[in-house]
Image (cartoon, rainbow, N blue to C red):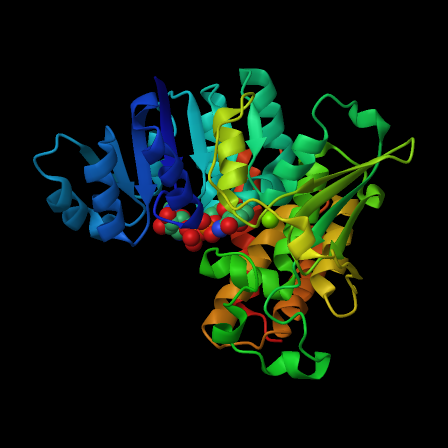
Length: 386
Ligand code: NAD
Ligand code: MG
């Protein structure tokens, strides 16, 4: 029996993970489940999966959580420290699926315990890639990417020597506004940005897909995880979302990973690696699909991609600041304080400010340096006018 913990259990990735665990209940011992404000879901999952511990990020919700699981003998805790402590409990496998930089500490603590880390939280790599990989190496922890593009790259690279890789192409669906005229984008509302043509995901990542900030994060994630030079990483729009990534080798051959847009594939791969398990996701019929389309991703239309290039080139604290500024820009867009196109304008302005003040070009020594840069970036991003 394998022991597992799921951080962000009530979210889109968390629920898909529990769906896989549910099918094979006797193979897993659930140690910890964590969630945020969706206490009803957390209580339901606690009743079904009987973890040792359930945690909510929000202390004011602890009484409701306690009440909901009373009599089950399940420990309940709340707050950021409680989530960090939950990740200190040694288990075989950890799903890191909290949204945002709040997922970084659980990812780090999990690898420090030597657990296998299934990494959905892309912010961990974007804000602290070198630190996370170094800690994993020191503690002998395996990291398996769960973002669909990165799981695809990982699978295309099985048995390959990374030094033979010439290019990596990650695909983008184009998000909610793929077919909108550029002139209309300034008026796009949060509700409109929240629909995705192919994938069913959490609210924030869906809006990030429309703005291409999600793809920007994924470019940086690719560079950090696979240690590939920025110039070798590309993105293209592929409206069908069936090819998730393509790896090109120095002999001209390419390996493309193809599959239905269903995150359970990448989660299942990470859960069972190095084995594979039967999964009832849709099977593709190529004669019905007919064609795969590809379009260039225009960096003028999607400035987040241009910013990601700069972040990848500069390294140091650029990724941390980029993510923090993007998270605040997204909050401000959701709260209708700024327009859709202002998100990229704000992120660029914040990065320029911090760079001018000389705050971005030092190498973070530890988690403290990263969290400090995250906080000071958020402060500027909240007050800057665009
Ligand atoms: P979601 O919004 O559906 O769920 C997020 C989870 O994190 C929930 O359990 C929520 O309660 C919890 N949470 C939110 N704020 C928190 C905080 N401050 N502290 C602790 N917990 C908090 O998000 P999601 O779509 O499942 O995405 C999770 C992560 O996986 C993100 O990093 C996202 O980029 C990545 N990812 C998601 C998908 C997808 O298909 N949804 C695909 C690839 C990568
Ligand atoms: Mg992805």
